[in-house]
Image (cartoon, rainbow, N blue to C red; front, side, top):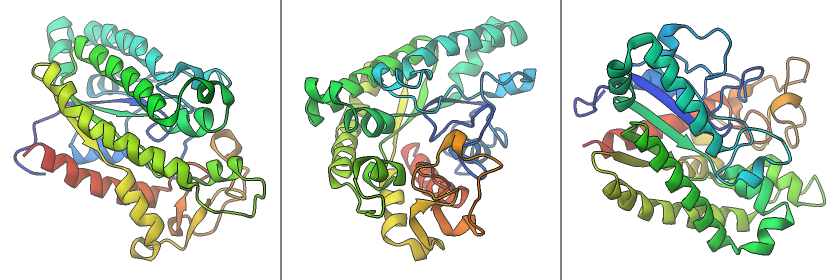
Length: 309
């Protein structure tokens, strides 16, 4: 790893299922982004869920994952499913700090939090499963003002993390949402029509442009912080447009089941899966496969190294 990278001793993950390991089910056929990042930073091989019943002291010391599938910056996004919104993950983090302090003492706990690398990834569900699907937010906001509403929540969340001692945060932008098989299925009448949704991709691009402008302002307002942008759109878009470069043969549906509706609990050990998962960009109808996550993280690692130089 580049000599210019700080020595992070812990990794903390917040957000949605793009980074969530799942307590009962994993939303991929292998390692997820946090696992690859934890390994790249030399911290550990996998990042366990904060609610896992069998966490060891060492797990707690080196960091856990607070992310929740279906989560979003907008609390309304999680109402239909009852999952934990991003805003509530801050409370879970406070409980974690108390546990950590019990193990190592307050001073050491503070030092661990300060030297932790934090990943925040959310927003896809706010658009895909809320704004573009349900009428309530569209009645209140146009796309641009909804982006601003989400980024205000994001800022509040980052300030909350900062107040609890966090100093280094990577914030993920949005992926090409209009190409996620589940979102394509939900928006179109004919399930065989797999045309990408350009309005959702455009919303993701303009959201990301705003986020890129916001991050330096946010960092300047929080003395001693280092906040970096994680671009997931560019590498995923490249995989969609040049699949052969990555060894993918199928990009319009997931490997699990029919691949256009199955996700999370409907992808389980009893669901039929494709014989060659590494040739599929998506594992299920919304989550990339391990092969795609690996390619994505290779791109993100270069980005992270650059941002610390």
